[in-house]
Length: 224
Image (cartoon, rainbow, N blue to C red; front, side, top):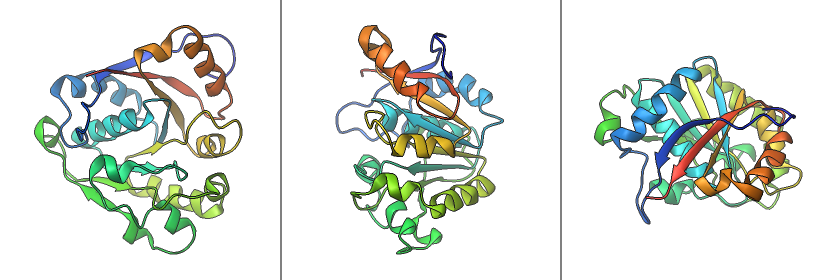
C-alpha cells in the first residue's frame, strides 16, 4: 500500500501472548495455520519489515512460523533505541546489532540460535536465528543508516530464506523506520484489533505511507 486509500488487508489473525509468556518456541497450532497462507505470499520476499503497536509479537510469530515451515529464518531487532527482544525470548542482551554496527562485535558473535518447541518444532529443520538490538542507542537512526547495516542485511539475505526485521516505532516522524524500510522487500503491520478502527486506523495508514517499501497488509494480534 503506497499512497491512495486502499483498505489495509488483514492477512492473518493470531492470539497474543499472555503476560510473561514467551511465544517464539511455543506458537499455538491455530497461529501456525493462520500464518500459513501469509507464508506462501512471502515466497518472493527475502527481507520483510514488521512494524506497528504489536510489531514485536507479530515479527516473532512470523519468523517462528517461517522456521516451522522449514525455511531458514533470521529474526533481527532494528529498534536500537528501545531493544527488548532479548528479554522477550530469554536471549543474551549483547552483543547485538548495535555492537556490530559500531564494529565492536563480529557477525558470528551476534547470531543467537533459538530452538523451537511445541507444534512449531515439527517442521523446523534449523534453529530460528536471532539478532538482538544490543545496548540501547541514542543515535539509532544514524546507526541503521550506516553502510554496515546494509552490508549486514545483504549477508542475511544471502544466508537465509527469510529475514524478518523488527521495526523501530512508527511514531518517530522521520528517521529510523524509513531507513530500515528502504532495505526491506515489503512491510507488514502488526496491530491489535483496535489498531484497525477509527482514528488509530487513519494514523496507521498515514504512517505506512511514509515508508518506501510496499505494505502487504496486517497481522492482527488478538488479546489472549
